[in-house]
Amino acid sequence: MEFVFASKNIELTDAIKDYVVKKLSRLEKIYNILQAEIMINVEKYRHIADAKLITKQDIIKATETSRDLYASIDLLYDNLEGQLKKLKEKKSNKRKTSAINEVQSEFEGIEIIRKNIDEKPINLEEALSLAQKSLEGILVFYNSETENVNVLYKNNDGSFTLIET
Image: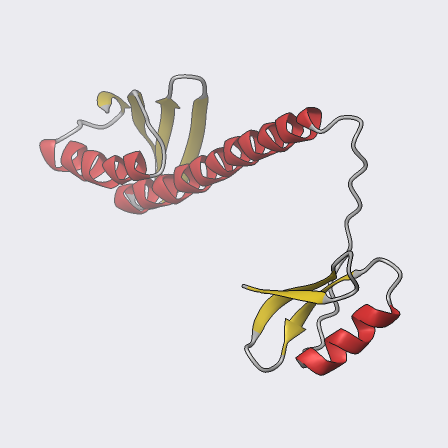
């Protein structure tokens, strides 16, 4: 990440620059940042830290003010971190949604029925009894003996097959 510094009413020392670089460099673990433009400003008792982060597709801006310069930089970091995490999550959800839409388009014309399984654990004997009564011929259940989700389905010859996960 490239840093560009500017200041108003304050001389930027190497210590201030090093602190900003050290603090904001951590943000690269969250998101790929190309450039960070930092503006440090002092107005009477207010220390203002302003940042603009430039990524491949987005620009993130934040401003924080406090009575202490280092506290303003810390607040700025927290603000930017929150924005970047939110942006990353938003883009991740967008990818997941597009992947689901692609899968659904492959199965157009096929009816998909979704059903939730009963959360109450049952043993194999109870499951077999329920599967025999069921019109669908298939039962997904939480096996109390193995503590796993199992599938019990009826074969064409009337026998049952158990799939253990």
